Image 1 (spheres, helix red, strand yellow):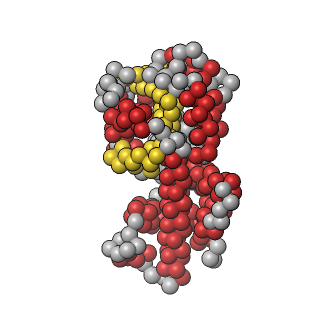
Image 2: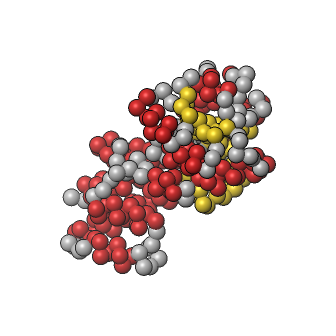
Image 3: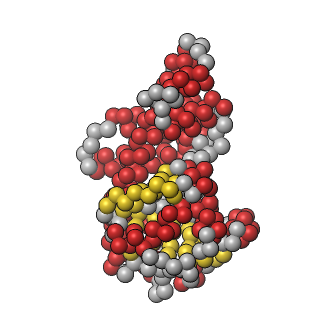
Length: 294
């Protein structure tokens, strides 16, 4: 069990990372962030987050490192790269990677860190910006159980559904499964709305009816509402969902799996990403399905 005097460092203070850092600061943890972009500094400072611009200095001042970055290569660079964590004499003893990255690479990184006396857990999240703000994220955790128990007080501030999946990399496997289901459900909602459009039936009424039956889901509740309201302020950006589906595609290739549904949504999400929707919420996927049925 950790005491609140532990010093937590964040790298990745975007849509998901910043609210998480704020929530830990509100709960009286000593929180610092490594950030070179000055335009974000004032917001962090006013929320009690220390800003450190020098990476080496940052690593020296923290006990636990939390990552919430975009891609596998970013995690590798931060942890095992030329100026990465393992190159520093003074460094945190625990890394919590809350990014969504390749589970195969996660296992490799965790093994390198272990040789340098650093414990790593993979703890990707689901729930988007609103879940991060409210501290209600679903967190899928992989790694050594003893380390997971140590950081559980931190995770309980960030999420209300924390599931220990298993050994290193298994949290990322769970997140890959999550992204498959979310994307294919979004595809189903989009196709359903296209049928409604063809018959000139009110899509909002259809959504209301379906929410009361077995078709009900968080995607139908949240993403379908965004589609109806044409409100694509990102809770989870299209470019990140496209990245996650590419990870799944690469896993399937390496493991010789045939996943036709995943191939379809991967193809369409990439189209969505390249069609001017990259910074929008991934519910903009609907427009790709709609365009295919003009």
